[in-house]
Length: 139
Image (cartoon, rainbow, N blue to C red; front, top):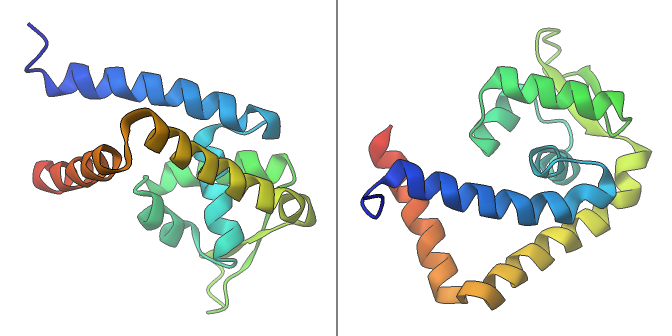
């Protein structure tokens, strides 16, 4: 019955992947989404929430909530953007996030390697490509 159901199968895969990613980022007291957002900020300091939302394919309101949580934990700070537009703040990493930056990257690399070891590099590359391509067609 469900072998043809995209919704059921994608959500089942999402739950399985979430468990693995949640375990991996638990030591940082970060959800996978918060960890990836922080990795973006660490690699591209000064991005605006809008730029982050485009990079992560998330709604700006979701990014704002994530930024609020990261700021509360002391991982990011907001400053006026370089354009001077007070409505768009740049997002910058703090010393606290800089201290864990390398370990966050290693965790991401380890997760990638774990998936290669589990399903194979070709299968992983193909799956990610197919998911991204399918998303573009469904929009």
